[in-house]
Image (cartoon, rainbow, N blue to C red; front, side, top):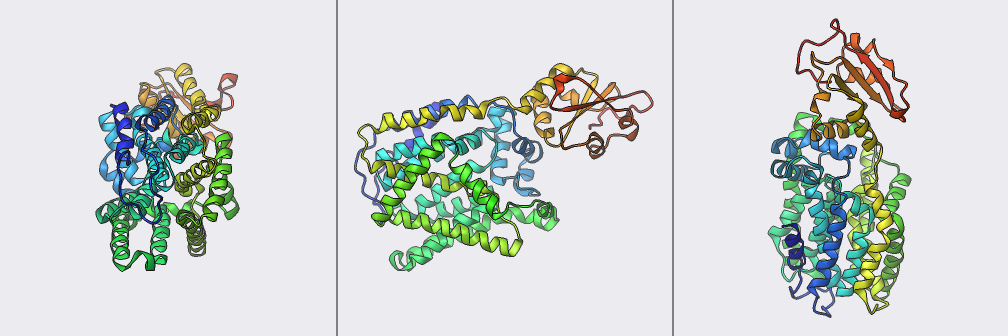
Length: 479
């Protein structure tokens, strides 16, 4: 079924789909070989599917444990930026149809990532050529940032997809599709509020190009963008009215220097990132020399980001994190595809697969075992049914998730059958703070003693005997 879906993606995204193009587009030069782009997508899908079952990271585990139990919780409860509303709703559907396994809950992000690749090809092919489209897809598939979020149950791949869909609807369609623009803007805002940045930048571009676009085209594009964005924002109103968004004030954003440096690292990480940067630079220079409308639009997006970030900083004193601007990545890949196309390579398909191949050593790091894997194994092998495990905040959600999925939920319940409480802390936490935050009785905490077992390093382990005098009477009490 997955193979069939990915074979259909290029068809959905304009393979053999000829339309009258806008001034931002060049005429199609070649008939698109269906099997080449399909094979490229399948190779990417096959590679990342091997990493889909890696251990859960903190933010995605937090999302699954706190926001995906029911649709109302997913769509209407926004107390922290972890809840990407639309993505959480899709994860709720996924976990209730496919299960709670890592591959199941990551399927929405993975599918959105594959659709992003298909849309990257569609847009680049229509702006330049089939060859440029293949290169853009290979560079996107080799991107560490896209790869990481394709196997991460977060909503960032949806931001890639919505930004591409919005560009396609506004600038590459034969006629304005108001309902589609409305749906895309609504979905984008439901994914995360920071998607107001690309929507606003595109709206300002349309206003700037008012004379060439015409009053009617401006009206039929702007109105669905505004109404769709407002419709998406309505899902945040219950949280605003109930005061649950007050926790957002506790999160401090990055400084300007941190924002720019982090964004640079996210966009151009690894060897493939270096290639992406070089080719995008070549494509940018070529597009400027040709006075390409796409390059003007891209420059406008950068200016819009800086302007809106400055206004945000003046008003709120904070900035979005760099990952909120990763929606630029597919367009940079499109520029890179155009950059390589200027050299008119004779064999674009082998070159596209070669670009993927050279990125494999970097991409394999995404699936390497980490501290969560080590802690997960230690809890399985060094604890018994009579133990209850309490983990510090840095690892709590991933370990709780894996204990449930791996069949050890009893390790999380502080019941009358338990004889020992194990508190696992990292370097920056204190076992007493962890216990107090989880409501553990002081009588139990006072009996805690450090465990000198080198196999638990770099973690610190405290063992707290549970005696009849301090044992809880409620068999359902959890730490």
